[in-house]
Figure 1 (tube, rainbow, N blue to C red):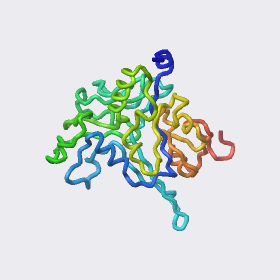
Figure 2 (spheres, rainbow, N blue to C red):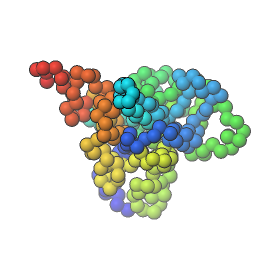
Figure 3 (tube, rainbow, N blue to C red):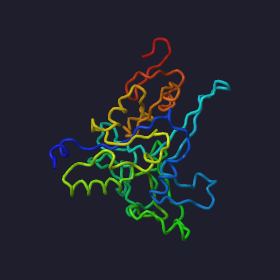
Figure 4 (tube, rainbow, N blue to C red):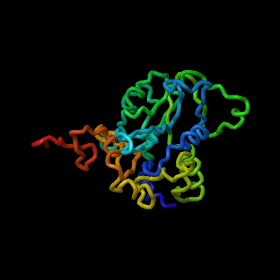
Length: 273
């Protein structure tokens, strides 16, 4: 087993989502719910009380027909590394119970439900609204209860939950690779949303591994991350040929111009820098 390479090159799992391929079908949301035992309430009309680990948003360029353009935006937890990738994610930094933590060996922001006491500081701190609070204990119909995933524990009421990059799948792949004295291969660890996407818009892998597809895609000229100016250093990258989509990703104002550096912008006004 090449233990030396594993020790010298820590893994940093992340994903690249091609917004020009996404059709907004919602397959990623359904696959995520089924894989991670995300409960569904009888009345899902109140979205403030519903739970989904990945949400697909619909945005437009704000122009009237026939110049209207639409873009669908899948948004899982961004698994922020914080400035300098030191693990000071917005949610991790405010949690008083250490119920959420940054794993430096994988780059994944964890959520430990048995430590969470529901203060919701992490929800307030997350700029991506990627965390959800359980207001009620999940009620599973008999047939559904029989088919719950045994690898993911259902969450009780009073705790916060979020996307885990299907970490239980990594644990299985890592254990198998360890017994076979090798490293985890790219396709051995894939999230449920990645596998379910019919248009192939989601690519997942190790952002630090040059052999993985995400390593090349994250450096694509079309690549950007949400709210770069906050310096949260998320591990979810987006691709789009459309300039208005990339500007919307960092909430650029009309008088601002991106400089090409993450989170950096300049005023369009005369004489501005």
